[in-house]
Length: 601
Image 1 (cartoon, rainbow, N blue to C red):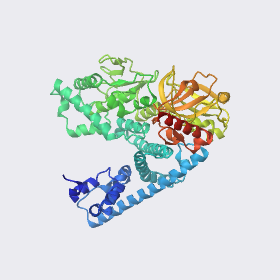
Image 2 (cartoon, rainbow, N blue to C red):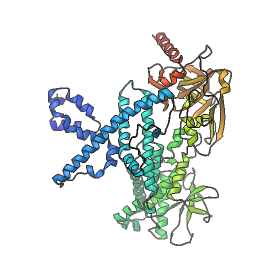
Image 3 (spheres, helix red, strand yellow):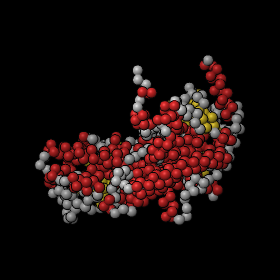
Image 4 (tube, rainbow, N blue to C red):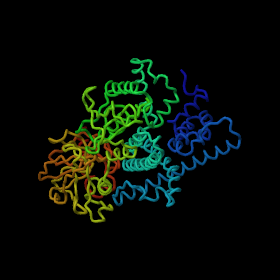
């Protein structure tokens, strides 16, 4: 039987050259035997692995450096080698600096319990941010991608370690989100300052989709590929109806131009343009069944996804304006100008097309919205065209931003500390004498109504007493009439006698908030109340009589690392910040976990 020892040196080189093989893997491989030590020479793979380690940085650094050119002279090759070595040197320094900075951030968090999304407050993280705007921009563009790639590598390392530090992972995720959004701000600024001709709406929607989903890689190439596939299918349908249509005589250069540029007018006469548009309507709204999102009571993360063009292209459901952007982008690729317009008297958006934009005539023009009815009854036609205005790329960007609008003051003074604002919340807003708050969307009320917990004193006493049945770190289930039974981990509690320090208010907000939602699952009886992070990525405020201990399990919640260092298999271990405010809970939780384990065996 053949073994790995039988493989040739060339095959081993191919295996070790794969992207998912790290330099650490190669070092370990070399230690297996003398033969592999000779084959897998460190120097041979060092440069290649470092280039693979930072793909985002490699893309942004200098594409020309990494383009192969067999006709380069010796001087050109020498310069290329210098550029590559400089690239690796920057990456190594960023990697080292990131790890040191992360330890400092966590130390600050443990000592102050302040969480911030503005990582520029930590000037030791980004020494490349300078007062000079040009220098600041250049360094951010060059170095920030290294940090992004390094954090990706760290998160991969965390997933391989069974006992990794949850708080360290949490802060790496927060920093990753911050950096990616910061880079997207630059990308968006560049986009919005381009000429109107090349400000493509699908590109804008892709940038916003990446902003809304910072941990997901949303590639523009993937979005354009899906749009191109729709174009091909529409052309196939049109060919079956009319194989002699003029569009089949269009050159590849024409299609390329329509794909990459906005067009001022239709490229076809009225009859042929109408035929293309009818075929497009039938395919998108008939066969593919694209529809605007009509659901109201869906989870907050699903609400977010339906505002992203990558999700809508895949699932055919989403925010109305995203569907209009998809339609507009496909129509343009087919040589049709189709505008997204707004009727300002109702703040409603529509799709608008007319046979010729070179004239003021509105004869045979189409203006419609789409609803959930079956095609062709999905069109809601509008007859009054006089009060419409075409929405520009800048206005589309505002619309998309408003869909995920964050009240920055509320965010800075609230979401940052979660339940722990009860104990230690020295944010800017608090220092200015304002109330601290944490807010989130509750399932039990419409999405535009926000429940907010408010505190009035800096600290709530949390000395344990006999009537407090549960402790932080315990894994429990809870249920009441307003929510399904859900497992979660306790991250805080307050006694009934401290209720005067807690206020629950309801605010009306026009836009959704993109952060962990809060469910008020309590009838406010005379009992201890708990805050629980649930497995469906929510935060619940629950009375003690609705809580029961459950079989220990991992709780998949994005905020776990803010409160706990690790999962012991039976319970979560509070980090220093949470332990500071519940100093006796860890012992209670651990004792309960041991007694339950003894009872099982």
